[in-house]
Image 1 (tube, rainbow, N blue to C red):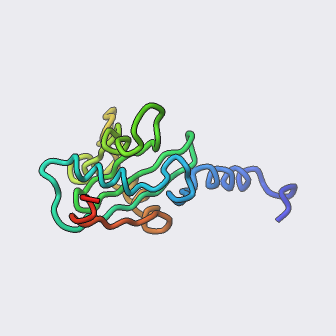
Image 2: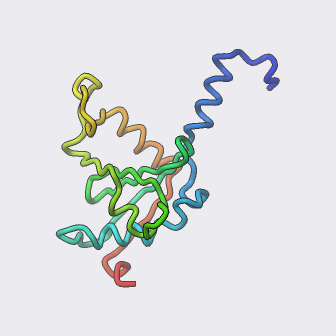
Length: 148
């Protein structure tokens, strides 16, 4: 494709997709191996979850890089900024600024979101979960994994 003959709307769309495209968690140094942070998250949850826990981590390059972590058993979608200076990397997920409860924090439409700072639409959640399925890194942690 010759960029000289590409229409402006097409070029803008390609640039937007590239900028917001998810990246693998393993390819982003800010997230390294998320396993210690996932273990710490489980261990800090009361009551402590039992059985196998399933996670998906999908990173995005926009705004300096961030990730969304889907914790299936807890029915949560957690915003993760990755490593933060002067903070243990393992604690960054525990103290994530946004932990969406997929049962109570999701509404049907933008009108229902209104001026809320925590509600999100079903469409928005579906897009994050689709990114997880297609491009995310998947992790399973058993009770016995937490003691290591």
